[in-house]
Amino acid sequence: MTNRPRLGRDRWHPWSDLKPIIPIQDAITKITADSIVASEFSAYAQRIITGLELEDEDGNDVSPIKSAIDRLILLEDPDVKWGQFEASDLRNYVYLVDMLVMHLASIARVPPHYFLAQSGSSNSGESYQTKESGLGFKIAERKLHMGEGWESVIRMAFKVKKDARAEEMSAETIWGNHEYASEGQRIDALVKLNQGLGVPQRQLWEDAGYSPQQIARFEEMQEAEFQRKLEQQKAMVAAMPQPVGLPGGKPGDAAKPQRGNSGNDNKKIAA
Image 1: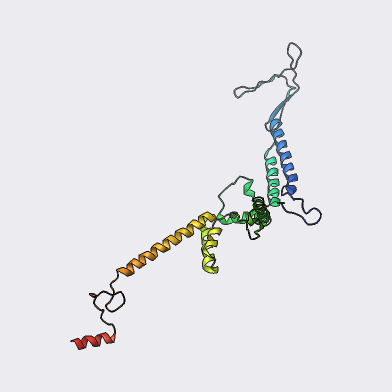
Image 2: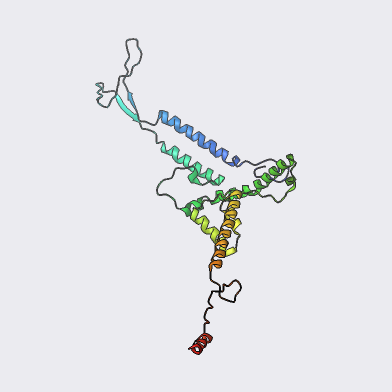
């Protein structure tokens, strides 16, 4: 099985879906590394003092300032100047990474919410379907080509076992449903397929995601339910009284009076 095979001389060489997005991923990695370096050296304000030099007894420079939340720093030398380097804004790195991730998602046809954390209100089902439409088309394309590959694999396995099914060409790969939809939406769509297009029930079961074993069990249960109802109807018919003169009637059964005008005339004559 080859992914996205090409025509011509390189038709047997697969085409990786990662190839067009590797440069973007390299850029994301580089920017992330830069943000880590920036957080180490410039993510906080740095204070500087000029014009002040202090040495210890050995002539080594020492830091004259020990800052704390409950300390006040006073210097008597008027030539000493204070200064401060402001902290770097690391949000710029975040914005750049988010932009590259959006480009990566667009090229790879992957929904952006698979990469980025959700913010604000939750999305509706229609919104998710719209965002995942590109990924859905991509998966459907892969199913079309890779399904044939899996069928070849199964035929080869049967051939190794010397099974006659190795020559069977009508095999079909059954894939699961990859589209996002609620349970109610899927069932409603299946009901409309049955009522509008007359799709057989077994096909609807397959589209609903049931396995062949489950479908076979459903059919057995339906057959058992049909036989049970049939036996109930036979028992009800056998328990009903039959009129005299009809096949299956009993001698003590009374004939039912006729209905309509003829029945009224018979009543008048009897009177």
